[in-house]
Length: 112
Image (cartoon, rainbow, N blue to C red):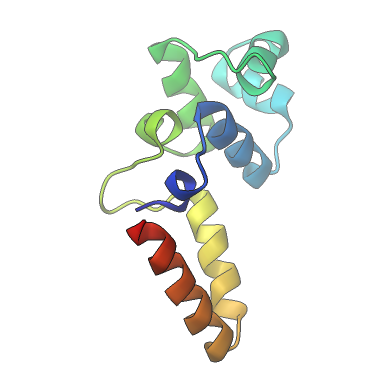
């Protein structure tokens, strides 16, 4: 189970997270996807609008993730989101004892 499911993330949250992880500004992602900054704001802002399929594909391509991940939080079985990679990198830096404790905690959450 992806961590984003455990924490109730939606399209808007995943999009914001991936933009933050990319290091790009919203306007840069908008330009790469061929949309206006105000259109991007409607997807990442309080409105939380969902884009049409073609725009969702362009946003995913601009961010280097799958459209399936942005829309559902799931990806292909062999893919790991950038957000998950960042979490894995952090886990690798923890001492073994802390990493094992956190692993048990995550497994408990995933079971519920």
